[in-house]
Length: 100
Image (cartoon, rainbow, N blue to C red):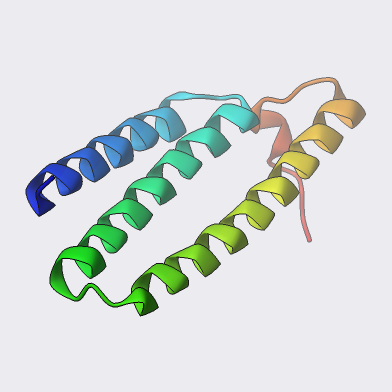
């Protein structure tokens, strides 16, 4: 697999995630779109590190970023669940008055 092919897949992931994040009104679907966008960026960064300098330093950094992203998405899903439980709706319009 070449660098161009991997970057094409990463760009496709990012574009699908961007469309999903901008076109949906349900909080969970917006978060899924953001997750796809982040995965596209991580795939592109990993491809650059693998093809330009195949040292394990870049892959270790990507694993740390993936772990931090997993914790962030788990917290986001927890907020979406609490929003749904308290208001009975999980639309982004009902979350505009959240603060903190």
